[in-house]
Length: 513
Image 1 (tube, one colour):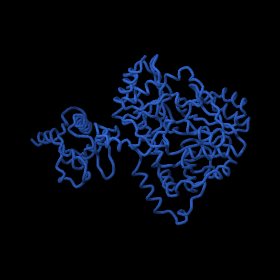
Image 2 (image 1 turned 120 degrees about the vertical axis):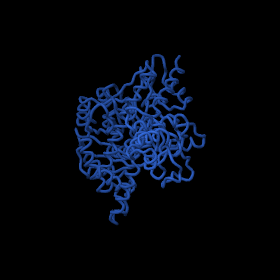
Image 3 (image 1 turned 90 degrees about the vertical axis):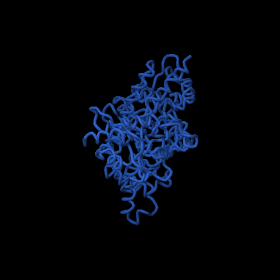
Image 4 (image 1 turned 90 degrees about the horizontal axis):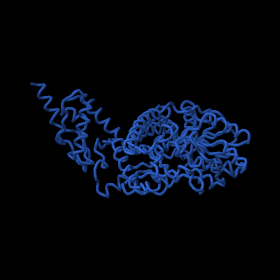
């Protein structure tokens, strides 16, 4: 009899009145504490059945967008299950993007789960980071993001480790000596530089000490300093990948370095073409993305890495290595940074922009001997010392690497889901590039032009980018470029992958000649 009562309770009761629980979702939140959830019977574990019941309730509209669900303790008591069952179900739904959880506001259904009024949608889309005209995240003029954001270069803003960062900030500030609160060191706080050198040696096989690291506001700030230092040293041209991210090219040009485009293929930058361009123009510096070329998704082959280093030594040159999303490799362990091959010839750029969020405004540059003084002279005010101390604590406590492991698993699963959905919805298309990062390159079916797909996608609330947008030259597009698009999945909730791809497929069908 008791068992029958328990099963009945699990089948029909989903919530309790607000007065029954001690925690409150907030004075203006819609409550979903009385919703009936049917856990049903079957071989699946309770937490999986509870998760399925919540999905049904949301999709049917019985739990509206923005509604707050009962706290795990309250729901567990009501259903007669362990609290672990509820927290496990909630955790999986949050990881999928089906629910969202924030400290102080409980677990709720995202507004994006349904049709929100225009004012709510605008507020939801007004995230702190916007994609610039280059497509990779930046801090340009803010504009509303599409409802289905397939733009490249934006990390998963729902999973920024807010609580861990706040904890690191609080702990760092609590123990900081008074002297640390004075004017910041132009090279960065010594403890932060040491922590970065230790982390990069372990995770990226970088060969550098704390004295070789400068803390910056991000990759763009680092590039501005490096380009200025190279110009001061007599450089007037910079070899750049074509296509590539425009922001760093533009930053170098503003410092007086003329970008010289070099083609890219499935093995990364074409080093033979780079050597020819160097001889033709006298350029002795190159900007490359060897771990994961943006936007083509290629990895620079070992032979080309060695050839690029030999070139730099032969011409007394410098290679600037943009390590922008090297932590996210899914087919194998991340490859080592090229800097480890030639610390005297390679400058390494890195930041929190892709691993956490551009909103942190923190990055670093690892410099060869002789460049440190010039880079510091080109600096200006560095990042907040308090933020640097928080980063130090975040690194040495292992919180950063735990966040990276969780992000890597999340992006790996999302990429698999995206590629599977593309294969089902667009059988005439193909995905190229290595399994890494937060974007994929899609070759469209025969006869479909990427620019037409971009326009049709906008009409379906989808943002996607034609690969031609990243060209470094005004010359006509090379063969195959006009039919490729760059599809980002970093800031796309797992629960929205299939619908986003379905809308993209509709745009492709509409763009067919």
